[in-house]
Length: 307
Image 1: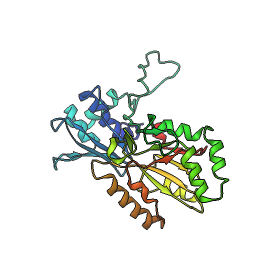
Image 2 (image 1 turned 180 degrees about the vertical axis):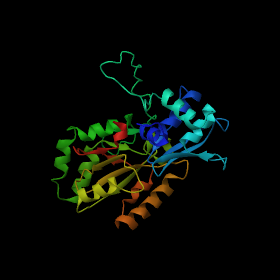
Image 3 (image 1 turned 180 degrees about the horizontal axis):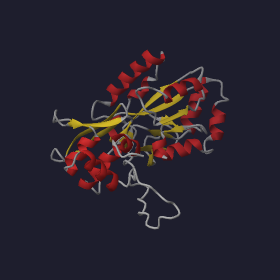
Image 4 (image 1 turned 60 degrees about the vertical axis):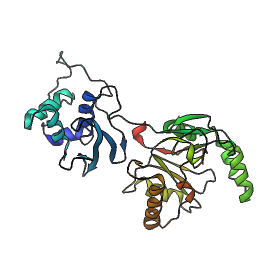
């Protein structure tokens, strides 16, 4: 493989790893990037007094950078690297290839070469992944004080397991809506996907998780909608599972609350879903402390970046 910009982009997650590699030089003991969909939350910019103004977004399969304060501070991963290394052209590409252990253009004799360089640690070239955390509550829903703080991966594993299979199957046999509602409220543990709370109340929010729950009810073709959501053009799916009732979906997607409020995001996304999918969503999602019951779904989907 010839050493050029495209070869490096192909081996660095569209250039994202170049940014994380350089930023770790300046901030070695910090999580330098938080990826959400096709962009990162504002990060520290070493070229703007370490302010949280650095923005990265994937445009046509290349992560481009900009600054929230400096209009003229923008470019591609190689221009960002040039600011750090003070190199350009082939010298810069060779520097990145060497420092990031990309090994582009190197010839290997698996059996004959006794001086193979030491392999980098597996995490060396991976961007830092922030795993969202939020509050977990024991049933019944009238209990408003959390048991613990859990991660998105932990909830994925719980939903995928058989722990809640029996009660999920039992709920789906109950025909009377009021009886089913009471059963669900009394038997199912729940989480507040949008954040960590001291108690389940919007005013008791400690930390927003960067997640928003979209609730679809009474869906005729669950698999069709599931496929559509997983391939949505604008929103990346963090978690997707069938609701306890069995006739709906819970779609957990990322939002950046540094750009707008939880409620504004919900209203905008609800309008988007109405226009694109001709579906109405449960308006309770606008509440940041919204409770989401945890059923059993062996086919639950989680964004592969967390696994």
